[in-house]
Length: 152
Image 1 (cartoon, helix red, strand yellow):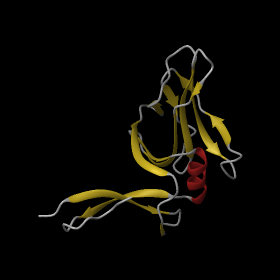
Image 2 (tube, rainbow, N blue to C red):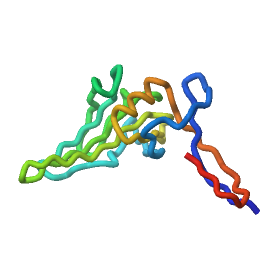
Image 3 (cartoon, rainbow, N blue to C red):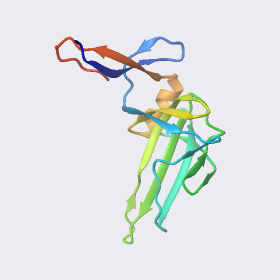
């Protein structure tokens, strides 16, 4: 009997397998309701600022953000397409003026009327780079043979 583990392999926009991109942390899927999603990050405090944007630009040093419409925790994703880099943020400023950002940097890998699939990256620069290169993850099943195996 073999144990099956789930891992990820990556392909570029031409479908050619590539190495795991720098900064990749995980994949996630968000529920879509009428071209809108509920933000997984939301700062409800009066000093909190919530925003979401499509990320463009030549590199992470000069990102261009196209801010998305947002009301409360609901984000309008009509301007998001598969392959776009995407950011969700809920930032908080303490009473002493300390800035506490909470961010998700991701690339949209799939979109249906019910779900939005994302590859999550550690930084904005890595998300923009992966989107520019057309990288996306594909879930693969790894059969265990009793030996230690690693998956991305």
